[in-house]
Length: 586
Image 1 (tube, rainbow, N blue to C red):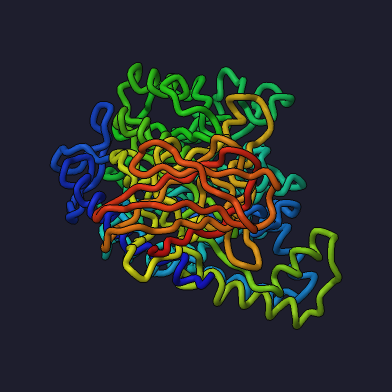
Image 2: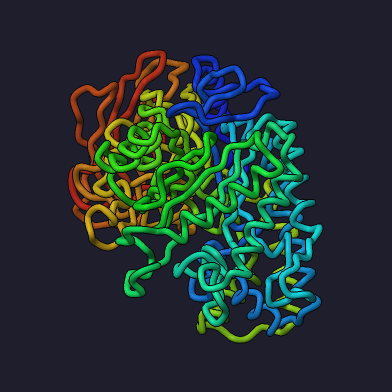
């Protein structure tokens, strides 16, 4: 199917933008440039006029810091390992050229403008320290700090775009000198070198970097805050507790964040400081009470249930210490999970930043589609393909960095955006695509069912991944991992996209506009599936009628009146692979 058809969704996008504007007018957000700094006031984040601000944002993961899974290179993990593998293939000079192109094209003005138009009001920037300063092992003079232009220039440009489109920019030190945890990829940590916690020189450089950033941006109100240290995960008193989830004191973590705050306050009294606990930002034992009057507590939330119990701990911290809390990172799940999580958070006055805006993968607003040459590279690095020639490898990598990752060449998953920005406050089902029925009839792709929550737009046996709560394996809520991010399993076939892995009791809703009333024949086509497949249809949630099966399709006669009609197609038996619905006048 043509990409323009996949990404258009004009009607849904228009509804989404209207809804986002309505939410802004109702409070909890401001779309006009406030010209004042965000600050912590009691348990709320407020603007300079004292109005509560609910941050709704995306994290720019994969830009300044690559993680293997975002590039389909999970087996390579950290960025420095990925870079070494690239250098082995194409050499150091061409590798540097690749990374320059990557940084120039991964985030551009088009990405920032789109986020603002969709209704987000903030951006979280995951920074790699090595774009701003040399590693301590490379400093010409030990103890001194060599400052690099590249990271500051990229941040300056991003800030200019954020100011233009009225988005708060939150600076997040994602990869600190030495690396801040035993989850190696998220901080590009090299375990052969001293970590952040093993080296005073690394901690000194971290403090100096934050002082430098604060001095540069102290007068910028659209800098929303300073997220001091992303997802620390370290066993300070028990090496067996690798990620610090049972740590009771966390004294080194508290001390470092206090020292960073003190350095920031030497040059900047304006901006919020955002602190994170151990265990990927969730273990606050010993980290609090707050040491600054403009401090926000961040937590991260992945793959657990979206009940009030799931955030009870962070709510208790907010109440005890009278500080705002912010979900600094979440994502990597289904649309249903996103909607439920955001509804829960905003009901408690908590803002959020989801992860990431863009990657090679389907459960985010933008999906990178890598070229075939890059796919071959991935196969080689996985040990499943031949080693490419240097020129082939270089061309594939440069196409990825100069073409594939650009906003206009990505798949735009507006169903993900709708799940985040409309559905938490608007429970109505909306058309995924406009289906207008005239005397010429209409063909509807089976995958173009309505936008909405499970139980409203569709029913499926698996809708999200809750493995942290259940203690089980990760749930593949969408086995096809393509086109849409709901529980409905969608696969690519030679004939286009199809709904797959269906089972009895699952159903799909389609909203159609009947321009010309009359009698129609509905035919539903399937590919393969089980021979005993059976389907039913209901109109406007009325009584279900059985479809007759003949030669790979199911059909029924309908009388449709003029106006908006809702068709619910349900699986009664078998596991049909559904491709399209056709309505033809009789």
